[in-house]
Image 1 (cartoon, rainbow, N blue to C red):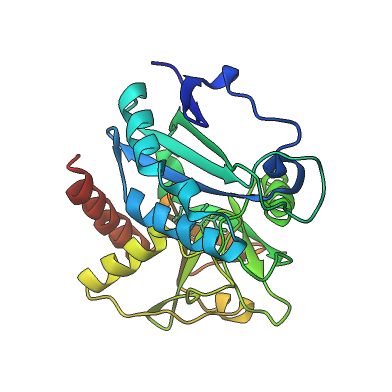
Image 2 (cartoon, rainbow, N blue to C red; image 1 turned 90 degrees about the vertical axis):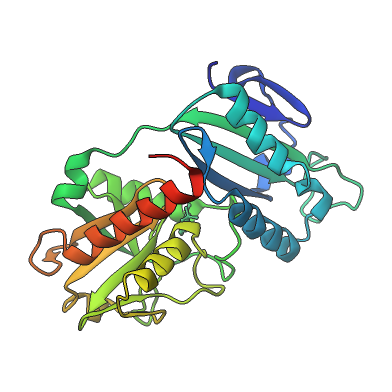
Length: 285
Ligand code: PLP
């Protein structure tokens, strides 16, 4: 089965799935999204992804009913596509209506899903580690909401890509490191693993939560406490986490090496422990 889409109750080929030019998701980014990974056709932590979307819907006042069919959409897209390693992308927009900023009351949300095969990142990237570049964090104040209003992320990611980096390290005006454009960040500083606490300033990554569990399981010292750009100078390790890269070591930020300039042991151990969690929960591997 080729790549497949779901749109407002119908399953159809991706090319045939079309939304209105007046959809508020398209015009204003007035919508939420999620990306769920399939391991051997089995969704990993779909419930957690949908719970994050439900929390976001509450913040931006999308009707909770709009989300009620999404567990089935994930299962159907996974089942119908028969893809082993794949992503299910979900998007719920406020709907289509004549273009006006204030959202009308009577409007039907648009529900979109797609499933696409997943190309694993090259093994070499994990062996050698990734490069990142700092970018000012100019995003809005509710980054815990996975909204499609992503222009600051896109501009930063594009600048980083042009320099040959993997992702940005977002830094706030006061020097606090928040996360990447599509990932959370962990640093090892003075032997302690640190990551920005959840709250409005970062997206509470599903992978981040699993990595925190993995660290507990391995009895590694971890504090959910933000670190600064200054502290990166003395970090022995740095790594990104997300649904796509899982746990990816970063060996260089801007012009400075992190630690020895090679991937460190904690990132490696946490990647291993994360994959064990995935295997246990999806029954794969
Ligand atoms: N932070 C941001 C800004 C993201 O966009 C993402 C994923 O898209 C993440 C963190 C990681 O989230 P997850 O682990 O749920 O993929």
